Amino acid sequence: MILASDLLAAREQMALTLAFHIILVPFGVAFPCMVLVAEWRGWRRGDDDARLLAQRWSKVMAVLFAVGAVTGTVLSFEMGLLWPGMFDRFGAVIGVPFAIEGLAFFVEAIFVGIYLYGWKRLSPKAHLWSGIPIVLSGVLGTASVISANSWMNQPSGFTVAADGSIHDIQPLGAMLNRAMAYEAPHMLVAAYMVAGFSVASIYAVGWLRGKRRRYHRIGFLIPFVFASVAAPVQVVIGDFAARAVFTDQPSKFAAMELITHTGPDQAMHLGGVLVDGKIVGGIPIPGLDSILAGFSTSTRITGFDEVPVDEQPPPNIVHLSFQVMVMIGTGLVALGAWFGFVWWRRRRLPASRWFWRAAALAGIGSVVALEAGWITTEVGRQPWIVYKLMRVDEAVTPNGGLWWTFGLVVVLYAALGTAAVLVIRGMTTRWQADDVDDVDGVADAGGTSDVGGPPPDREIGVAP
Image (cartoon, rainbow, N blue to C red; front, side, top):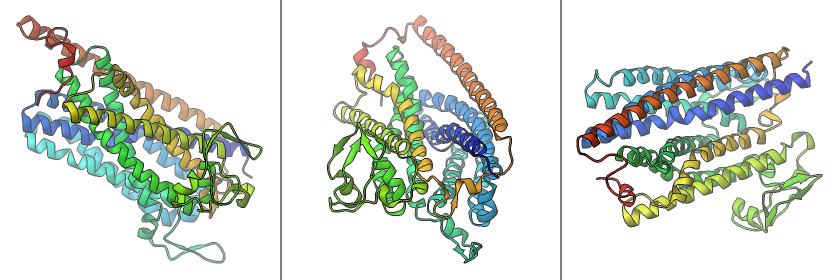
């Protein structure tokens, strides 16, 4: 018999490990591409600042990859240990994406090592090319994992016999399920947003503190441009994904939009929560949900009145997390547009301190939006672990003692997070000391230091 406390412990442990690991994914998928762009600029243009950035970023990339390898391994084992019921029944269907992800991980690990230790051992061109497999294997690994997750939302690639057994397994059909078409690009673009805004936010903080040398400007520009381009693309993908959820998972869509009664001309509610079947505190925009879902106010949307009570996801969590994701994403698009407009008009970075304050917060905002998106996806599928085929309480392990393993995971992840912060902090402290020494040396030789030199308004531009 499965105890409710054990089911809660399994859910909490899975939520913690996924929430922790997902923050590291963008730095194994998107950040390597930004490192390569910095190195390419350094090689092709003889840009020493860009090359130095690439060298330093590669060390941070390696640290985060190592931490992500540990957390990802724990997450992989948890899938089988915490939810054996799902793999007992569907393991033959869903196993291939995990095998591909494992292969991609090993390839990425090998080339991260080659790239990290090849700075002084390979020619510039060979070293640049050694980073390409890191980017490609990161994309492949992410696509494989998302394929498994999207299959849980839209299972396919098999038939279910009358006795419930699984037959006619088609691994490729399972991997290329309907949800894969929007979940994979949604996560990939999100990775570029999180990595880009997070790295750029560090240099934005430096700018606010007066660090405006060319090195810092390039350090801001490269990741911020990536993120700014990705943000509006994400809006298009997200719009497509929301309509697909409306079609394929009506109960999740009802929770996302707080649709209580089925019908046309459904209003969108900004904020608000559902209390005793009534929306409290939201600002309704008449007809907008129906227009967004089907391009017409006459679009009929399924509400909770047509969803059995035991199949309804928790509406307030799903609704609020979805709105947090959308609101932050909209703000990030506006921030990128602000940057793009100023760059188009003046060919320089914005001078407003408000822009830099917003850019400094963009990294945290992008991570919050990423977490909110995964909460929407996973909690919105409840109570199903495989949509409409297996409930979560049918898949959880019958073994007890899960709160003990949850406690051990908390300790492990706290140690990993602390160690990663301390190591990266130690590296950045040394780099800052080296930069100060370099600036002092230039100033002593009669050059321009970071304090003297051009006035602040001229410091904002980037030399060609």
